[in-house]
Image (cartoon, rainbow, N blue to C red; front, side, top):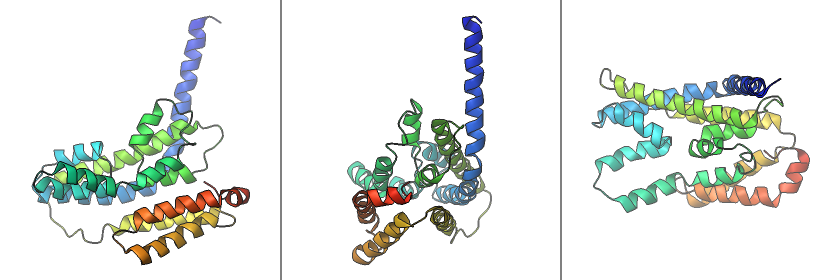
Length: 247
């Protein structure tokens, strides 16, 4: 077999590997699709009623890809020019992604150039799936995480763009739609609870959240919670790994 034949065989195998990862990554993102489309459409409508056409939510969702920050960015665009305050606000809102990144250091090893997009596109939902998903041994881990991230962003971008278009055609009360994301995270938490044997990580997450909420209040508890969870997971890493509960 000559070199061209080897190259063709390798190319077919790579394409097959990518297609297989794309198929395996789709089912876990279906709940994300439902939540992202509801919130994405809501965001697009909000942008429209605030005076922006559908191109703004389309390109902002592609470039920022951070739901909370994108909603806040609407007010930033309507306010006086304040780049320093905007930077600080953005860092505060998205600071939790620092902890996501630390948790994904080992998982992103060996993913090559895909790591660049995985870092950029990592949101709460893709982080949850890529951490908890049981990836089959014959599926490429890097491509699986890549497609999970890509699907999630496609859901959000298309939902935001559609909301921007529909916002100029219809009007409806979107109050309460944000609970979709809360419900989705409850489902993810319950699935993770069922997979764990000792529930160490789940208990640590719940206790840290409750304590920090009581101490810091609802507006400032998120970052202290992430710090506490990181410290506790580091402190109890060995018993958690022994129990098989470490993500």
